[in-house]
Length: 479
Image (cartoon, rainbow, N blue to C red):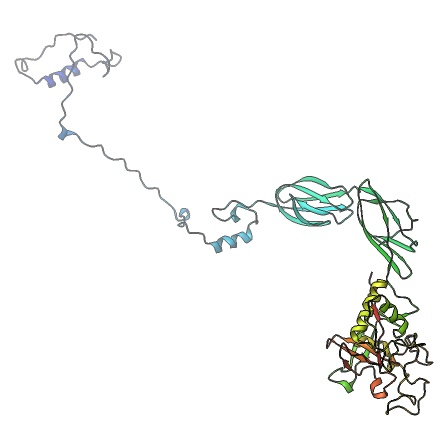
C-alpha cells in the first residue's frame, strides 16, 4: 500500500493544536505496514527520505529504576543426600586405618610426608658360600643372604671372597618383587712350595690334609693359608699368602711342643679329690677338674741345676751342712738348699733353652699328681732310723740318712711313673690362692704328719733349706 504524504483529518480535529508526540504516534499507527507489506525501518536503520523521526523521550534521574536482582531458588535436599560435616582425622584414626591398608599405600603416608616407597626382597647366593656382600658400598652380610627387605630401586651388588675374583652386578627391585642373585665365583690361583728339615709326617693347609713331597708346588686358589706340619714332639706353623699367578716358597721352622717323654709324664685330664678336712680353713676338701698336663718324672737334680748355673741364669746354692751342691757323687741327688725364687729362675732358663713353657707346679697340680683314685703316692726316704732328728721312725730303714738319688728307691714309683712325690725333698709349689710359695710332700727329715700332700706349708720366697727342692710341670700344648 502506498502512503500519501498528506494526511486528512476530520473536521472535529481540524484546527486543534496537538502535542507533537501524540501526533507522531498517531502517524506511526497510520503508516504501519500490513502483513506482507513494506517493513518498517528498524532502530539502527537510516530513516527513509521524507519520514518523520520521533525524538527519544527524556528520562530524569528520579525516573531511573534499578533492575530487580535475580534470586536462585535453593535446591531441595532429601535426607539420603545429607552429608555429615567434615571431621578432623586424629593420628589414632590414621594408625588404625593403616592396619587395614597396605603398609605402602598412599593412605599410610603421614599427612605432609612423602609416600613411602614400596618394598621388595633380595636374596644373594654364591658358590662357594661365605662371600662378603655389599649393596651400594654398604656391607650386609656373608652368603647365603636371604630375605633382605629393601626399598624398590636399582642396587649395585658387590661380592668378595679371598682367593676369588670380585664381582659387581646391578639388580633392579620392583614393588613387591623378589629377586635372587646367584654367582659362581671364579678362583684366582697361585702355587705354594713348602719345605722342612727334618721332613714332616703330616702337612695341613687351612686344616685340610695334603700328601705332597717337600718343595713340590701345590696349585691353590689365591688367598692366605695357615700351614701346619708335625713330627714327633715337634710342630711347625706358618701363615703364608698366595697371590694370583704367584709362586710362594717357604721353609718351615720346627718348634718343640712336647717335653722329652723319658723325663716327663703326661697326666690325663681328670676330676680328683684334693684338700683335706684337717685343713678346712687353708685347704678344704673338694673335687676339682684338671686338664691334661706334663710333670717331670723326677725332682730336678744337682747336675741339671749346674748347667743353669754355668749359663749364668741360676744362683749357686750354699754349701753348708746338708746341702748337695758341690758334694762329690751327688750329681743325681735332688738339688736342695734352693729357694722359690731360685726354682722359678731355673724354670725360666729351661723354658728358654727348650722353647717350652715350663714352670713350677701349683699346689693343686701337685695334689693331682699324687692322687691315684682314692689313694696317695707312697712315701719314700722319710725320717727313718738313719735320720738325725729325734722324731725319726726307728723301725724304718731306706738306707739313706739324707737325700737319695732320684728314682732310686724301689716301690716309690706311683701309678703314673712319677717318682719321689712324697719324701726325699719337700717340693716347692706356687699357690695361686695365697700368691705365695709352699712346700708339699714332706722330706727325708720329716715323719707322717708332714708327708700329707694336702698339708699347706707356706715358705718365704728366699728361704733355702736342705729339706726342700722342686720339680717342673708344663701345660699341654694346644695347637
